[in-house]
Each structure stands twice: as C-alpha cells, then as structure tokens.
Amino acid sequence: MNWFSLLGLEGFVARWRANVIEAAIAAEDRMDLARLEWHDLKRRLQQLLVLTIVVGGLTVVALTMLSLAVLVHFWDTPQRATVAWLLAGGWTIVWAASLATLVTIGQRAGSGFALTRRELAHDWRDIKERL
Image (cartoon, rainbow, N blue to C red; front, side, top):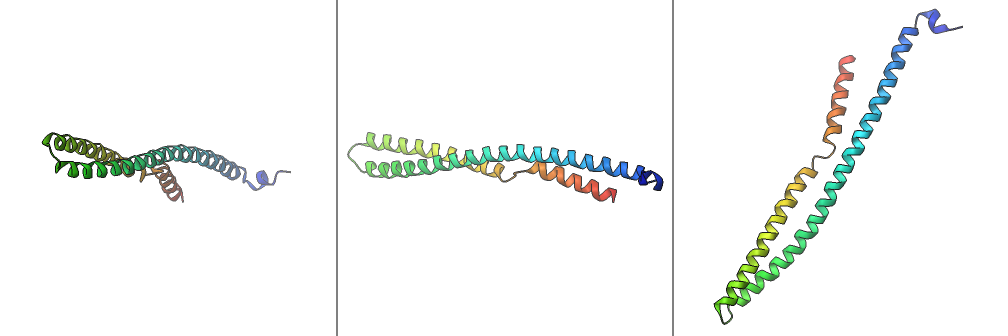
C-alpha cells in the first residue's frame, strides 16, 4: 500500500525528489568549477614562484653589476666606465621588467575562485528567493 498516494503527498515527494536531484547536479557542477579554478590558481602560483626566484636572482646580479660599475667608473679610461654603466643599466631594465611581470601575476593570483564564489552567491540568492 502506498501511503504517499493515500495521503495525497506524491506530488510533494516528487517535487522534493526533483529538487534533491537538481541540487546534486548543481553541487557536482560547482565542484567541477572549483577544480578547474584550482588548477588555474595553481598554475598562476607556480608562475609567481618562478618569477620570484628570477627577480631574486636578477636583483643579486643587478646589484653586483651596479657595484662593479661604480668601481670601474673610477678606473683609468672612460670606455670601461661607459661599458660598465651600460651593463648595469641593462641588468636594471631586465630586473624592472621581471618585477613588473611579478606584480601583475601577483595581483591576478589574489582573485582565486572568483567564478566559484560568484556561482555560489547566485545559488544562495536563488535559494533565499524561493524561501
């Protein structure tokens, strides 16, 4: 004997069953989105780490070359000084470009899981509207 049909609750149970199935599908979609965003965030963090190491190494080289340029500047000929300053300037330009790239990627890495957060906020608004 089906008590739900006797009590007239089969429509109510069917709606709840459909809602639970829809919620399960939505949760699965949100987990897939979070996984994709995690891979994207992990890739950006790896780039950030590599660029941090590059900027650190270039900083050491730039400071070494700058010190060498100051030493050579007081040596005998002005040609040595010009070359040393050009090398130091070149290393400084490379360092500045690496630092700019590092800052850009660092700012983008701060917005991890933006799509997942937006989707969950949208879902939460929909749930509150239905209640």
